Length: 152
View 1 (spheres, rainbow, N blue to C red):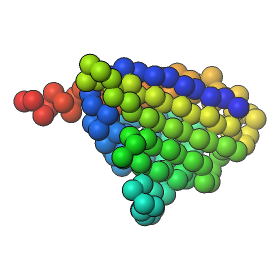
View 2: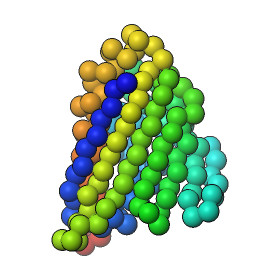
View 3: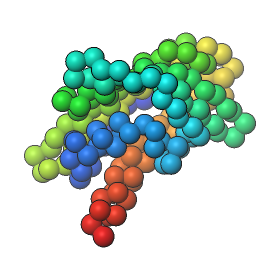
View 4: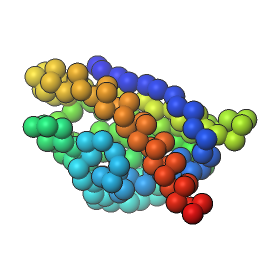
């Protein structure tokens, strides 16, 4: 199964980065390939907020919508996304936000996925690693832009 993992050092706090990634309804504004995102349901499991969300992605002629369960564990600065329905056979995505001594954050991003269709897997596979890299960068860029706006 294809997987991608990266750690980015950012100058923003774990709380800032957690809140930015947890605000999934804003993804169409800045996340590459995300064309739409709709939350179907919100619930609470202890201190963890649980969302059921539909995300529509597009790249050139490829268009797909899939449903995920998103667990927002704010006290532990962790987000876990698991697959519910759509074109994947398997999808797991994790974000963790770890404070650094310098006041910044290690943003850890992990995704493991496999499409149901081998043809789609071959077509998308070549593109997806680049997209995941750009996606991780997009969150840092968004945090920088929001911080600059707050200062002005």
